[in-house]
Amino acid sequence: MLKKFLSYYKPHRVIFTLDMAASLAMSIIGIFYPILTRSLVDGFSSGSPDYNVIIWGGAGLLALYVIRMLLNYFIQYQGHVMGVKMQATMRREMFDHLQRLPFSYYDDHETGKIMSRMTNDLFEVSELAHHGPENVIITSITVLCSFVYLSTVNLLLTLIIFLATPFLFFIALSLRTRMKNAFKKSREAAATINAALESSISGVRVTKAFDNTEVETEKFEVGNREFVESRKEAYHSMGLFHSSTSFITNAFNVIVLVAGGIFLYLGQIELADYSAFIVSVNLFLTPMTTLIGFMEQYQNGVTGFSRFLEVLEETPEEDTPTAREIKNVQGEIVFENVFCDYGTGREVLRGVDLKIEPGKKFALVGESGGGKTTICHLIPRFYPTSAGRILIDGVDVRDFTLSSLRRAIGIVQQDVFLFNASIKENILYGKPDATDEEVVAAAKRANIHDFILSMPDGYDTEIGERGVRLSGGQKQRLSIARVFLKNPPILILDEATSALDNTTELLIQRSLDELCAGRTTLVVAHRLSTIRGADEIAVVEGGEILERGTHDELLKQGGVYARLANAQMKTNV
Image (tube, rainbow, N blue to C red):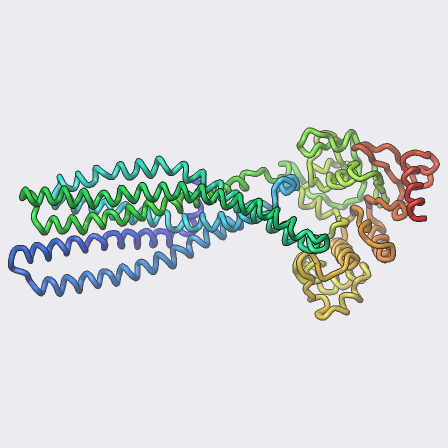
C-alpha cells in the first residue's frame, strides 16, 4: 500500500522537494530561539550584558521568523495544492476504474457509498499526502536538533529527558490500532448515511406521493444513529489517545523542572543552561504534540486510502488478449446452450438455444423474472455466461472488444435514464461527435423535434435530473432519438413501451417500428399486441425457452403463449 501511495507523488516531485526543504528550514530556524536565550541569560548572569547583542540578536531572530513565515505560507499553499492535485489524480483513477467495472459491482454497491469513497475518503487522503511528510520532516529534524543542542549543554540531563520518550511512543502505538478500527467503522457509517440520503432524495417524489415522509425519516435515523455510535467509539478511542499522550508530554515539564533543579542545586549546571533546557524542552514537546495530533489524521488518511484501494482492486471488465473489433455486422445472433447464474450459483438461464436471423425481429415474452432481460444483457456482455456461447455473425462475443461490441448494439429500456443536461447533450450521447444536423434528423425520426422546438431554449433546454421536467413519453422518445443517432446494426427493446399509456404507446411504437427497420431486433414485451408482427416469438419461463414460433403458430399450439394472449384479451375487454 505504501508503494502505491508514494507513486502519486511522482508528478509533483519538484513541489514536494521544495515543500520538504521549506519544512527542513523551518525546523532549523526553530532551534535558534533557545540558543539565543542561553547566550543572553549567560551574559546577564556573568554581570556583563552586551546591549548590542540583545538588540542585534532580537533583530536577527525577528528576521528569521519573517523567513519562517514565508516558508510557512509556501508550505500551507503549495503543499495543499499538491495534495489536491494528488486527490484529483486518485479520483480520476477511481472514476476510470468505476467506468470499467461490470454491472454486477453496481448490483452489490450503493451509489451513496461509492460517492463517499470518492469524496470524503479521498479528501482525508489528500490531507495526509500533504501534512504527512511535512509533519514527519519537521518533527524529526526539530527533535534531532534539540537533542544535539541540549547534549552540548548537559548530556546527562538530556539523556534523562529523552529516555522518557519511549513511554510516549508506547502509549501512542498501543492505542493506534484501536483508534484505526474505530475510525474505519465511522467511515463506513458515514457511507451508509450518504447511501440512504442519495436514495431518499432521488425518490422524494415517490415519498410524497405515498405520504411516507415518516418512513423515510425512520430509515434515515437508523443510519444516523449508527453514525453517532460509531463516532462516539472513535472519539472515545481518540480521547484515550490524546489524554494519555498529553499526560506524558506534561510529565516532561516535571522531569525538566525537578531534574534540572537538582542539577542546578548541586552546581552541575549553570543558570543559562537551565534556562535553555526550560525553553528547549518546549521546543521538543511541540513537535511531539504535533506528531500525536497527526496520528488521528494518519488514521483517517490510511483508512480512506485503504477504502480507495478496495475499489481499485475490484476486477474490471477486460477484453481477451486476442479480442478484435466487430466490423460489417450482419446481425445474426445465436445462443448455444447458454447458462447464467450472475455468479450466485443459482441458475437464471438454463440451456438457452435460439437463433435470430439478420435483420429479423425476434420477441421474448413470458412472466416477470423468467430470464428475458438476462438474455438481453448477455449479448453486450453486461454479465458473463456461466456456460455456453453467444455468437454474432458466427463469432463468439467474447472474441470482440467490449467497446466495439457495445457500439454495435442499441438499447431502449423501460426505465429511461437521462442526464442532468440539455436535450441536445442527451441525444448526443448516442454519437458524441455528431453534427447539429444529425441530431435534428434523429429527433425528427423519433417524432420529438416539434416538441423540442416548443421548449424555451429548444435543443439547449435543460431537462433536470433524470429528465424530471419531461413526461414519460417524451423521455422515451429522447432515448429513441439517441439510438437513431447511434444507428447500430443490432437493437434491443427491453419493455420500451410497457410503462406508457395506450395513446403514447401508439406514438412511440411508430418511432420504434422505423428504428427497427433493417436491423436485427430483440424485443422484450409484456403487451403481446406490440409484438404480433415479430418474425419469431419465444416464450421464456424459469430460465428456459418453452415455445417458439410466429404469433399465429403459437396461438394454434394452445400452450403458454395462447394462455397469455387469452388472459390479456380478457383484461382489455
